[in-house]
Figure 1 (cartoon, rainbow, N blue to C red):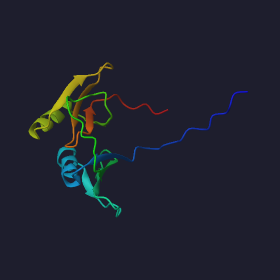
Figure 2 (cartoon, one colour; figure 1 turned 45 degrees about the horizontal axis):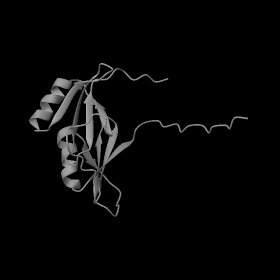
Figure 3 (cartoon, helix red, strand yellow; figure 1 turned 90 degrees about the vertical axis):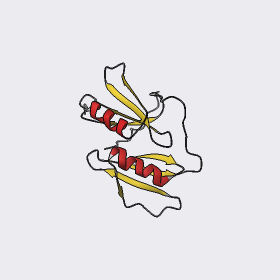
Length: 137
């Protein structure tokens, strides 16, 4: 007799992405200045950090002070952990990254989608791209 598998969770939406940093103020400024997130009220945790929201995306970024953030170094790596944001104009996104002096990697992936990878000041990878419409079943 085959064991019954429990039902999967039923998430409704992505609420937030958490990034670790040694410098919460610098990190929050990066997400505000480069990606247009704005500070929102944050619970009184025992560690420093910030909560940021981008209404257009409908997602929060939680900046968390950590004594040993990832601090990835070396070349930008498209297959490392990252989060991705859809943009309407990848050329404009590239121009904005250049204006901010941010190193990036632009490519077309195996599925034919254009994407740009870059890092925040603590090495957390971010992807922006043009993606096909989401299919919701």
